Length: 228
Length: 228
Image (cartoon, rainbow over all chains, first blue to last red; front, side, top):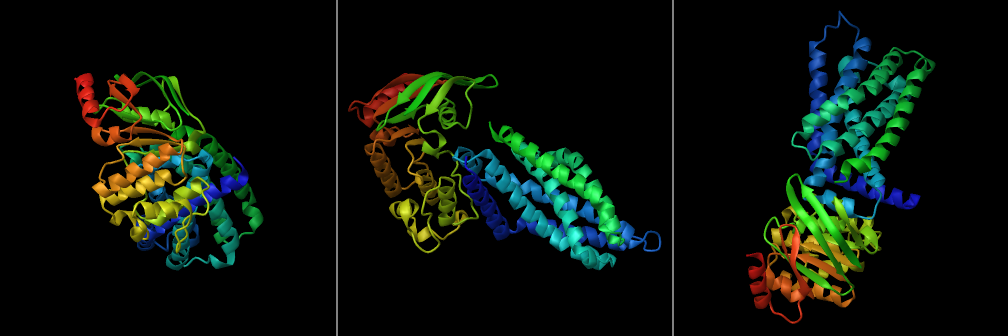
């Protein structure tokens, strides 16, 4: 398969998923509502005299985004089962890698949209200054999101044909999410505390390495997960 | 053009295919009749490459690009319009030009007109009746002008006019030197289109012969005798 074909087929799958999602808006609204509710609960539950907001914010941000992402990942392959469209996709003369990459891109846009809602709300509710560190914070979020969404997309394909796909996806994907989330939280803390970028460069490298390894592994393993 | 060699496949203890062999040449239309659970759908899925047989070999000249498939489900996305669905599937098969948002041009546009879908082209698939959805599924299967058509109960839900249109499309397909394998319960419609007829029971062909001028009534009688 030539690279331009891969790019074209990947975009066809991704754009189709995005049109469907932003037209129905069911999953994105539920994920966004989840983010708002969790941040509100944490805002009212925390004791500002016990822990400083800037110390608490990174953990709350990543816990919230993780579970919102799992909600989002569940829908990735569900829509392919509606009229057995997955059979059509598998029968089409496109590489399995294009299907995976298309789903990955759609999921990244989807989770990214939820993050675009979650981060400003975190700044608002917790009175944490994120704008001075917007660029490095965006880099941390992008790298971590690629990591856990790449794994989540693969597991979503694996679990979609099971009867308990939503539960199974969460059980399988959460252990794999721990490393990028831990590193992302460790990188976000110093950033929000105003430390220099050099303090988190190690975490960024770890996140980038995780992304390369797991996107590569997922591309290799994906055909085996969708072939009957 | 299409070759099946000693195909065997089981689901647990249920033997779905038990040594099926046949060839379909250009211009040939093979109609396969059989009761529920005879293995007809499994056979089509093996021919399409959606199921890998446990023994034997299935080969379609031209690979996946050459196959047009209509399964039990429509393989359409309910949230997309008829035109968007066709545009998506056309793009996966590199069919140019895809149906644009305003004009109907090229093969997809021609199919919309021939299947009486022009006035429904901008309606979401979820808003269509079962019969109209089936017409769109037929257009989807034909969108890349496939050399081999694999059809599983393609007349389901079609009214008389649409069934006649499908019959004409299949006759033109055969006249153009293309092959068709058709699985149906409807002996009358299946026989009318077939150049060859097979009866399937318990994963085996119990009859496979050219139709040789036999009418639906005669084929129906032979079928009842063979399956009884």
